[in-house]
Amino acid sequence: MTNLTKADIVRSTLIVLLLVGIALLLVKVTATLLLIFAAVLVAAVIRAFSDPLQARGMPETASVLLALLIIVGLLVGFGYLFGQSLSAQFDNLGSRLTESYEVVRDWISRLPFGSVIESATPDIQNLFGRAVNLAWGALGLVTNLVLVLVGGIYLALDPGMYARGFSKLFPKAKSGVVLSALSESGQALRRYLAAQLVTMTAVGTMVYVGLMIVGVPSAGALGLISALTNFIPLVGPFIGAGPGVLITFANDPDKLLWAVLVYFIAQQIEGNVLTPIVQRYAVAIP
Image (cartoon, rainbow, N blue to C red; front, side, top):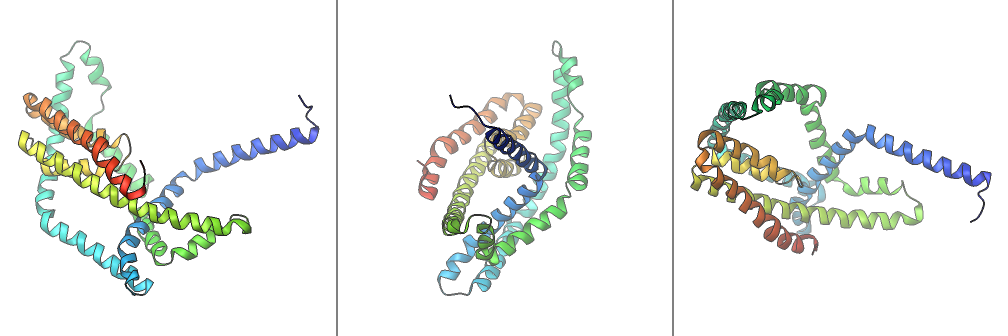
């Protein structure tokens, strides 16, 4: 074993301190990094609409602006067609969730040792109140949303400028490799998001149809929740299933098993059939 010199020890110590410093810095700027990542996702969605227009000869800026109009038009059209129905269902869902939560707490309190569990369960109104205060206060939800949207639009308008600026953080000899990697990553991200949209739509539709057949109220709103939360890896399906299972248990426990089966079957089809097939064609993941 070679003997370490004083210079080796100093160098190793500095490297460790540098790594620790970078880790602490990343913890401090996590919120900022998440905002940047969200803006990149918005830009990827916009470019997914604008790139086909640009390929047909439309100027880049005009294609991005037209893509924005198309996206806004689709959102407005969806709201016009389904907004009133979904709004009523979400209003109904909110009141039912509060009532169902209290019913479940009361049922738990009657179990052996249930009073201990029930006392440890937070009051849902206080919980929602704290969540709303956190979202609007500490996190600055509206401000962050505006930053993400504006940042995404600017990224979509001229992604090359930001890519070239990012590549300057690396050695000049590697800038070409970095730019190539960023370009390929952007294309893969757009295909991945398109594939995710397909699987999210499929899951939401399956949950909606299944819960409607079982007879669970607000099936449309619950299907939309499942579709949106399915974007979150690992824990998303459990978050999406929570409201439906809770409402079914409180309103008609005899249907609980059927509701659980609806969510279980939908997630098994998505995880074991849809996602592998769709992502294989989208981003070549076996």
